[in-house]
Image (cartoon, rainbow, N blue to C red; front, top):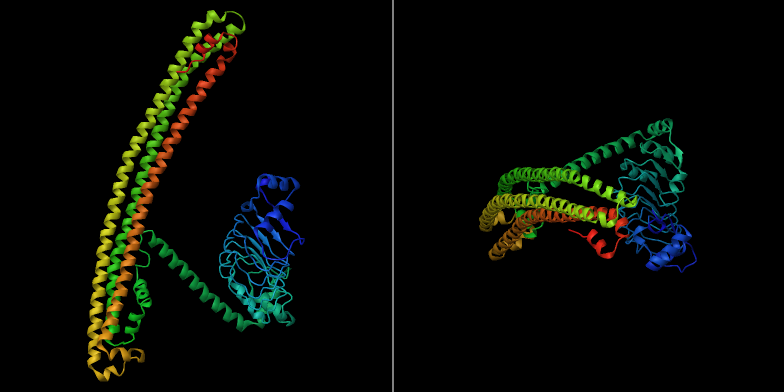
Length: 554
């Protein structure tokens, strides 16, 4: 990789004005302190390539705020040590970052690191941090330095047990390190860590710590086990959602979406507080919803499998057609080489006779012209044959693409039909629920004794029949809009998926066809130039008119 395209290290020295990172600072850094003098010259001549920087060091700059780093798309290592930074921020675009050094600053809180999922090395040495938090997404963390901060309770380090890849921790210099129990706790609690303050942890040290903190470690183990189960459950749930999303029916396989609808509807949630038979009706509504959507989910899953099978058949058909085309083209080229060989041999013989003065150009001219015409005829036949093969392949693929588009449209149309029926049934269930709400609340309204048991926030509303009915109607409207939005989402995604798939296959085939035609013409041109090169020695020695005859194209 050239110096222009490789920024191995960018260092800004303390001879500039203190302040916030800006484009001028970064540009000046590259121009003045590039990896080599030659690289700096190239940058000055051809422009700065901030998006190619992989290592950036901004030390001793009195930088007050992290900013203007979003353009460093290739950044892998960032050093912002020895500055005046008080807040971790504006790093979310640096998703490829592997190492981050924020040591010797004035940071009080660990935050805004969620997007740095590839981070392996993190140094927060010599700051003002009191609590370990907000690092849960850093699952690849290997090395962590939090020494010389303000952590007063060594049990705070139990937070680091969640990082399964963590191997080295630096903790020295925190107030709690004055407690002789600190390192015994660290060695026994951080079972995956190999180095603490750059010293190897041996098994004897761990055992001594376990004896001292047996009860606490047992609680930590139980908490870790619970967290691990929750993590696995979440991963399984997310995988399930992702899987169902392929069929456009995520969150429809259980009661979650219905429950979410009520959670997002303050009126409906308020009415549920009435309790009594209304809760029974709500459970019936939930059961009906789950049963209705189960049919849609099952159909959508089967439809997804059918679509994948159809896609495979289409790809196999296209690949087979391509293989047949390639094989036929090879046979045509082999035939061309057979016809070309004697013509080339004859032309070489002509060149030999001319170069050894066994014959003059005038004597050889008829043979040369005949050979050129014969070669052009053979070359034209090759071009025509290859173009016919490509045309036949394109037409064959075109027929397959049209049928594929029809099949995909029919499948998506059927899915939409089943979806409309399912969402229609959901709306009917919502209508029944709304009617039951009205009936249940009407009974309650007529029973003053029961009315007295209503929640305080509902009492005033239930004393006014019109207000209560308006609340029921508003809740039902909210639910209908929710149902419409989820149906629209399914329909839109399914249609877009089909359109993108069909358009993608069309675009790919058009590009392949164009590339193949260019390839054929390029090959023909090369063959023509090869023949022309053979004639060069002869054409330079004859008059222009004869040279033109010798060099004619077909």
